[in-house]
Length: 367
Image 1 (tube, rainbow, N blue to C red):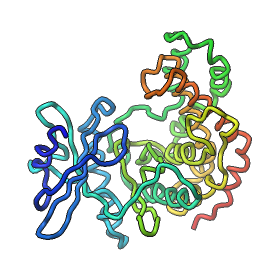
Image 2 (tube, rainbow, N blue to C red; image 1 turned 90 degrees about the horizontal axis):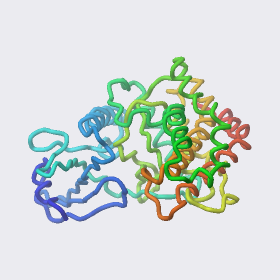
Image 3 (cartoon, rainbow, N blue to C red; image 1 turned 90 degrees about the vertical axis):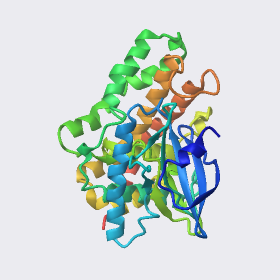
Image 4 (tube, helix red, strand yellow; image 1 turned 180 degrees about the vertical axis):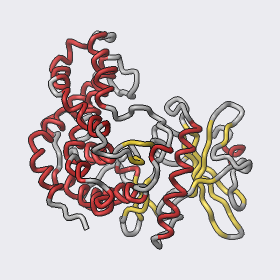
């Protein structure tokens, strides 16, 4: 189990360590759960080895987290909530740093385990979408007065769809380094015929019609913890990609991930489509918390953002396929092409239902 016991000694944990084990199912960071006895009280801590191959700016990443979480804790406490349960509580090292670097140059951080919590990889009812929408909406609301420009952009231009089109997709098509272009001419045409999508949100930011906000940038259902007894959303986790962005990206990516009738790599695209009941549930939850902190232009573009984030993801899968699968992990030779076709089928279905999606947003009452 690597040198995890040595790592435990570096953090300000209370009590005596009784057990440490591998924990969770994340694909990026390596995670452990440590149990301590503090004079008869059981305390649990999560320790993570941060994947520095994915995240190059560890200082910036951890600085962002240690700025945002105290702000959240303060706001939650002021509102009479449980700040130890409704946001993550990160622990400093014994030398008062926000992460530990071992002799191998590996990076570790730690936070308090949230007890009696559960997460879900997939929703089987609309209530989970509503609750996750509330969780990410609350995250937006509580950070609405936080200076987003004080955070590091740990993944520059992560959702700049226009830049991804111009500097990644088009070169991938032109260079055709994996000699796969002939297999995906229809998919390439699908993207190029919708180029105008790419600049719409980018231009709204440039024109100051929508503000930069603190955004999560990985708003999957499994990044929300639920109370294992009530199934109510407790808090948002996985804060590695917290940085400046727009609320549209967070909303749109949650819809992309959570409302598809099919799995992301379903080969039969006839099974792909947007579940409008799930869309409505997530939107109601999200706007019940974040609605008053958003401006009208943001609200008016929520449905389009859902389409845009799906389009961008499909374009990224197709780009990676053309480049020979250098970014996303694949299980078989045309896995990325299957994923791209899946996302484009979802885009096409959203295009058919865009009027309905906009009407759903319009009819949600914001109190």
